[in-house]
Amino acid sequence: MTSRRKPLVLGNWKMHGSIDMAEGLLAALKAGTAACPGVELGVCPPYPYLGLAAARLAGSAIGWGAQDLSAHGQGAYTGEVSGAMLKDLGCTWVLVGHSERRSLHGESDAIVAAKADRALMAGITPVVCVGESLAERQSDATESVIARQIDAVLPVLARAEGAGQAAVIAYEPVWAIGTGLTATPEQAQQVHAFIRGRLSAAGLKGASRMPILYGGSVKPGNAVELFSQPDVDGGLIGGAALVAVDFLSIARAAVQRV
Figure 1 (tube, rainbow, N blue to C red):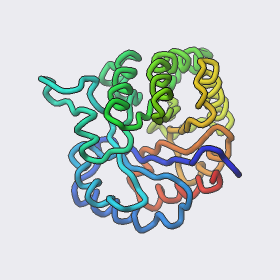
Figure 2 (cartoon, rainbow, N blue to C red):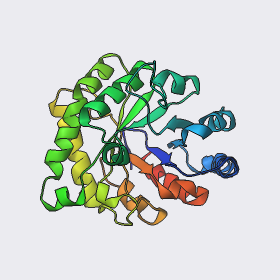
Figure 3 (spheres, rainbow, N blue to C red):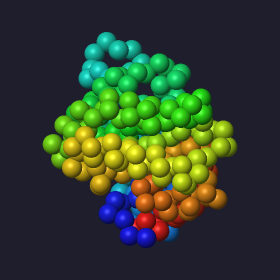
């Protein structure tokens, strides 16, 4: 399948890992990248292992990014990590608005937009996560929830486009994260098409080129079918990203989009 958008597969390690685990996983991923031609690959380890990822992946075909960043530039914000610090560590991407940040840490749409803006100011590509809960899907509120979340970041995305900067959207239905449930390929495509249409209707000329990833229990067994959808440009991978053979299998599934 030919795509105008380079497929992207990112691994979100969440709060998992150790130095030994990271060393082994990074080495195995580096060894397997030759089987994924044309697919952009990246990992998002916890903050303590970003320096290790930078050291081990430098010069390889795998990039690295962070799972979050501060909405502030610098200052007396104990425990926070700035975009400039992530840039110092060579990060290409940073996740913003992951459902776990929204639900467990109370991050509002406005905070997510501010974090995306900080990422872009630091020269890092924000991966803006959006998604609905099971109750919202069951009440037919999926599109209204996604529209609200997308609309909050539209001014930031418009400024990025004007400056020639890149951004990524990740659709992660909350009900499919870590539950073993997965949106059907048709459900994923429907929401991805809605997101792209929303971006286009807002006047973003690059809407047709912006990668939109799917996240939510992506596994080797369902990746090919998910990635075959016209608006699913890759994946934001959780649990399977911690197992090298599974992550690489998912990445190979994205080769069909090249």
